[in-house]
Image 1 (cartoon, one colour):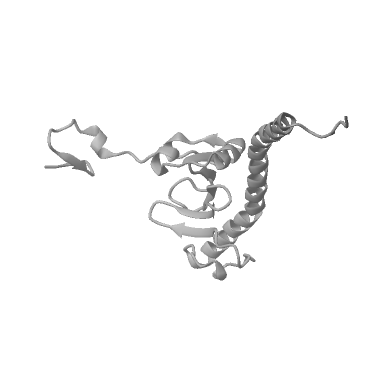
Image 2 (cartoon, rainbow, N blue to C red):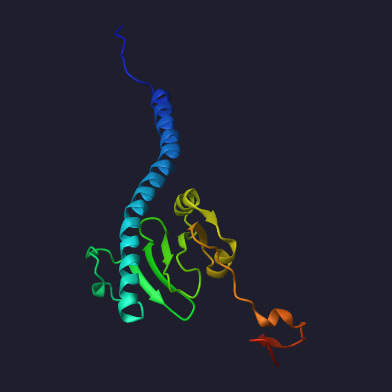
Length: 183
């Protein structure tokens, strides 16, 4: 009788199971490392845009949202870089949704709120949250304000503006706006 050599079905299943377990452990760590490197690559560009915005502000008395007006080389594919201002703050940011579900924001020097503060923010994506958590401390007030996790890397933490309605006792059937009952 001739003996056939080879692997049994059980042996093959054990090998597949071991490979599956290794992949389940290694893949999240790999994804985190890739996200961290992509987010780290955008930091110097973001800081350059911030510095160019500060120079622009010195010349024009305001920030610009048009990156082509700045004296900085921004890659054409850098659609994730943004600048915005409102009466509360002026920010240079990088949305990296496709990469991590998070990004960075730097509040500009003449911002009414948190000038110079540097944040890493993350949506519900656990990879982005892990990357941001490794870089800073959770700013709970800003997290409550925006609804996404915001980690302070440097600068001052957010302090929510005082709501005058908090000083009034509750009034049944009425809402409050700017310290006045709306009944």
